[in-house]
Length: 452
Image 1 (cartoon, rainbow, N blue to C red):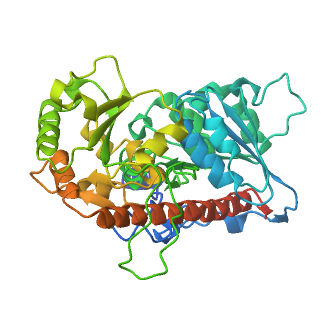
Image 2: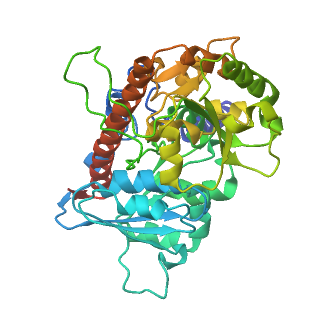
């Protein structure tokens, strides 16, 4: 009898251990598009796109109803400092047919409303409205969105947390959660708010570069213990701007080696973007090299543009003062137009985190303006929508100002051809963004049982 009881007890313990291992094992990980160093002129959609939740098919389990109405999209930004990201997502999502979009943005700045108003869209979005108007009890007539694009998702979920349960239970809204800080997604409060949406396949996470998507997968939401693996994608945050100094980017028809047309207001200049604080850059070396370029006699019209902000500005030596300009508080159109007149943009990363968990705004700014970056191979690898053909390469052991010296020795036509390649790449990426988002929306609506 004792032997029988001992055997039953042993079997019970084994059953508990096996059951525990099944329920608490790591979930299947979500899929991230692979980074690529292939040509940026290929549409971004050629970067491998994930199927729905990797190898987990959720759409076939949802009965489908033909959806003939407009797709109502609410786009929110509650941080007050991400105009360019708002514009990129407005353009990509509102370019889709049958979309009606309402924009809720805390603090549109520097003429971004004018840029968004200039977009050629099937239907013009409303707004920007105040974020408090979204899901407000004061507006009972407001239609619940089919799609919610939370462009500052880390704080949007907290801002609207009282509405999340209602939206989830209603079952008719899908969230695109845009990530700016991939290292902040182990915060328990944000995790609790988002994970219940993950469990119902009603949210996906969108970063602004392949490297931040990879970090989010390895160190953020990809580590959550949820039954349904989170879906992580990325979108290149660029959009069309009518740049006042830019000619048509159409290819020349009179031969590959024919001179390219002069760009209006084109300068012999380069630009640096970022905080003016001298601790962020070696301005002494920069100014010394600029002085040497000018004293050489061949580049007497050379100008250095310092695009940025900050009260602690570097002191400019008298010998080069006429050739250094501080450009501050420009409108976005002025900002991109000024960059477009230069032959290179030099980024200034505040830390190495911009190569793994943060996405720099300088990279897309160069693309929007159609100007090559001075970039290392590590930068090109991290921002996988770039490649070496559309940047001025900074090799190991060389400084960015060394690269400027190399570019100065090139012919005008060589510099213009590089800029032409960047602009063609930019146009292809924008087209690719629109196409990809169209595919995303169809997937999202299918997951909610509505076939577009």
